[in-house]
Image 1 (spheres, rainbow, N blue to C red):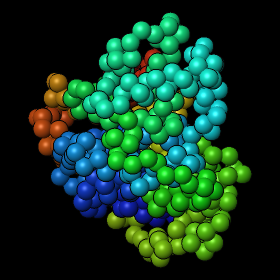
Image 2: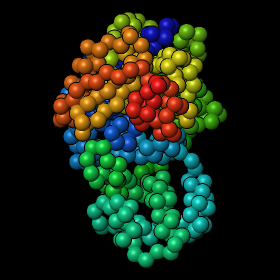
Image 3: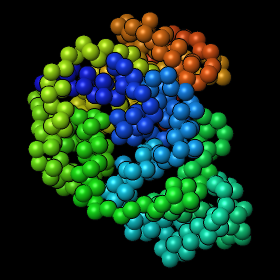
Image 4: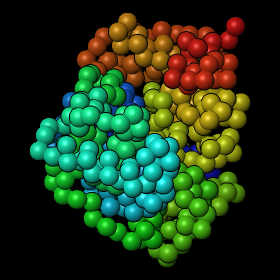
Length: 392
């Protein structure tokens, strides 16, 4: 099978080529979860959902509460559907006892002290509307110096245990000032317990539905599992998951997709999309130029990913990184720096218009010279790949 077929298959499934997807929930299912940090969560929706508006995601998060923010694969924060929460809590992130040990040590409270402080925080939140960490400091009353320093860590512990949830955001669509609520109050029910092995099988299915065909190493990297846990998750379902070769690389795909995959016309994937920092499409495969060869040319890898593996805001042309971009909604500009002369600027302009409609702001496309590698800028240059990394 040609890599172009695999790329086309994934792009169409995710609404990144052909017709965009109908709803936010479709986009979250199609990506096995979107990165929850603002504004990435909104911009990932713009790229995939037909006539997306900021309020569409807010409706599902805050009014319908059909989805929620949770730390899961590789300990990163994603927006995921509530029905997947038992799977995620059972098979992603570190073991709960390791969380207690780590936070007890880092906080200076010890394990028993950290758990006791968690109980105190939870009791203080009972019967109250969502609160930020700053508001929580006032709510729980006098604290020891160790407890003051440990509050953020223990809030994370409560999230890992499914006792609290990032519920609301104070500020606009670019804010990450979270307010927290008790999990049961916000979602209506506790997280059900699930067998970890069965959970890994279900998450492998979800991953392949979004990103297959993919290799064992791809799934291992994305989840943060060991190889010992990854291989059974792919092989236990039997003929439900089948092996395929993509340009000689041993890969896996759901059997129900095999006929469509092998018959797909790569030309059907012609598209341009503006994908944000940490977008699922550029972050779902093994972190290396080889693992991400379908998404990024080797020469462009240092301009798309930094040394820590963070994917920057990239222009995806036919599923391949063709440049980087920055949004300044206050100035009303989208600045694009191409990797070559092959970028289709008319399609980029059309996507800028889609983005303007989504966020309710007039936007002007600004062309920038070719960017340098992310290493040419400061530590977080991937957040501003043009401003901080222009070639001298």
